Each structure stands twice: as C-alpha cells, then as structure tokens.
Amino acid sequence: MGLVDRAKNIIVTPRTEWSVIAAEGGTVGDIYRNYVVPLALIPAICSFVGMSVLGFSLGADHMRVPFFSGLIMAALQFGLGLLIVYLVALVIDALAPRFDGRKGMLPAFKLAAYSYTPAWLTGIFLLVPVLGFLSILGLYGIYLLYVGAPRLMAIPEGKAGLFTTAVVVIALIMSFVLSLVLAAFMPVPAMM
Image 1 (cartoon, one colour):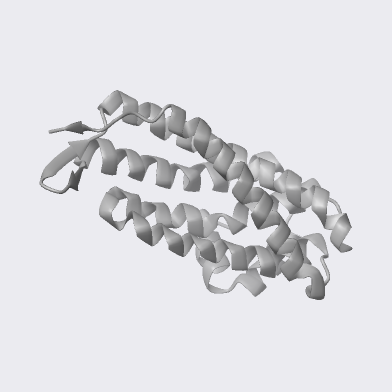
Image 2 (cartoon, rainbow, N blue to C red; image 1 turned 135 degrees about the horizontal axis):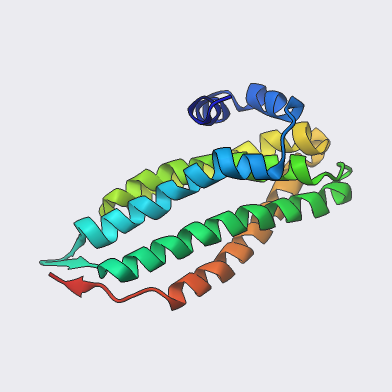
C-alpha cells in the first residue's frame, strides 16, 4: 500500500486499517524507509522553512532563525523524530506482556510508527509559525495507539486504555528529554 493511502486510511478508518497492518509482513527497515522517513521529514522541513526562510513576527519585529542554524535544527528534529519512534516501539514491546498482550518488535514498531502519523502530518502547520498551535491535532495519534494496541499487540480491550496511558506517559518523558537535547542546539532568532 502506498504512503498516501496508508496515511489516509489510518486517519479516517483506523479500526479497519489496523487489521490490514497487523496482517502485513515487512521489516522495521521497510517501514522506516517507506513510511517513517518521508513523514518525519514533514515537520522538520516545514519548521525550517517557517522559521528560517519565511520567518515570523514578534510584535512589530520580523525575526528569522539563521539559515545554517535552522538547517542543523531541522536535521536534529528529523533525527530525534526517527529515534523517538524506535524508542516508543521498544516501550510498547516491553510493556505489552505486562498488560496481558504479546511481545513482538515488528508489531510494536508498526503500532508506534503508524500512531505517529497525525503528529507528522500536522507538521505542515509549522510552515506558518503562528499556526504551529494547530499541531495539537496530532494528539489524535493517542487514539490511534489505543485502537491499534488490541489488534497489533493483543492487549485485551479492557486494558487498552491503561496500556495507552502508560505508553504515552513514558513517550512524553522521553520526548521531553530529547527536546532538551534539541533546545541545547536551538539558535536565537535574528531580527530582519
């Protein structure tokens, strides 16, 4: 299945699409190459264009992140985005048996990768920094994780909510730590 069809289906008909995904083969590398990498580029590129190329207004001042600093920031954002998906998959795989599910790195990676779809797609709003708040729509991925956990990791329906909560809390902590790493490299915007 193509990237666009998969992204559309996971957003619009997640219950049906998770069953399709569960039945598919493939490898973690295939999913990275054909799905994660192209989608993870969206927020990195859009953030770079919005902050370094187009710039943003702060009161009466128009500001821009310096070009090369913006490139470095985008590369770090992209790299950390690839890393967090893998780390979340490790968490999913480790937690599944504790919630009466089954272990399996491939289904855990599928669950992590496809659940991140809304977060990556809403990265388009970073083109216009003032619209960046709309990235909150990416939280739909939490629902996708909840719906997909029983289908991919055999988590009982009654435990899917608690499993999802545990994964999300751990993912937020990991994301916070990784964002601190990114912030250490964040340049100060320059006035234009």
